[in-house]
Length: 377
Image 1 (cartoon, rainbow, N blue to C red):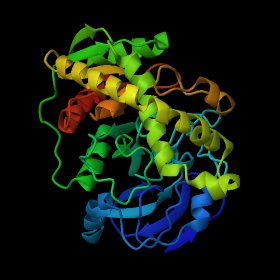
Image 2: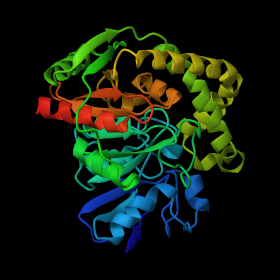
Image 3: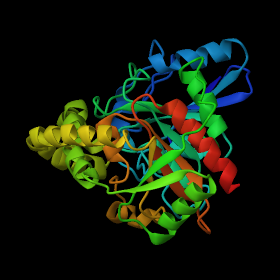
Image 4: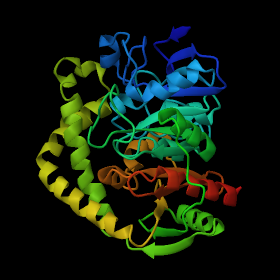
């Protein structure tokens, strides 16, 4: 049974398919049979028709539905075309952050994070191109996993920057993210023993967030090694050129005939940042190669890296465009490695610890995330 509304907030399309206990929500970039994919964009929604087949990443969910384990509850709202990190959407409303409705929910997987944080879903799928799973997870105080590039198929997912795009699960806790990974990759199991040696990268951040992360790492009993952030900031700055140039290839065509049905912030990104990114691409790719080699050298010294997911607490809705950045998250996408955002206590709002692993290190990440959760409860 489906109910589609033109003016919603957390969900763009409500669904009630299956009878299992695990309620699953899916970002509306991901094709679901019989439902239009809107990408959170009025121009796309007006052209969209019910899709004929699921995205590849839906296969495990359908299998779980068939045996009465999972239930599909809806397709979630997002920052339009996944091209933004505030989660503010002029067409379908802005999902309300359950921690504080005055604050941004984060994006682009805003509806997925809010659905989980508000108790409307147990697991939600998001996509992460520059931080779009981890940032809303941090803003809403939940757990989000950015998977290794290519580990989960993006076939049937509306693209933003294909060399960076990933699909990953979000949940209230690490065990919920494990369930999400099992839905995406049946048979998935986290490592039994967590890693021991963690490299602490220090980028400029709110001192309260830095202190909360240090307390959590120490409480979890990790051996913490302070590391220079090296080319991290260069990777963040240059990585924008990769993201923006590929976004132009993915969405630039929409401006030709549909400009009036695309939000002003996204038009500005496509027309300005994305077009400009084409000229920076060669330099950005060179910086990407240097960054990947630097990371490979760090894995000889530590098992995981740790730093904030966000350098500050989520901003108010009316200040988001001026204060929000992806410099703590985008270098992960540039390297293709997985990362986990885990909330840790920091006062009235949680901070978010970001743990980063080598390629295909999701099993290691989730074992470490469990240890952190147990330590800070």
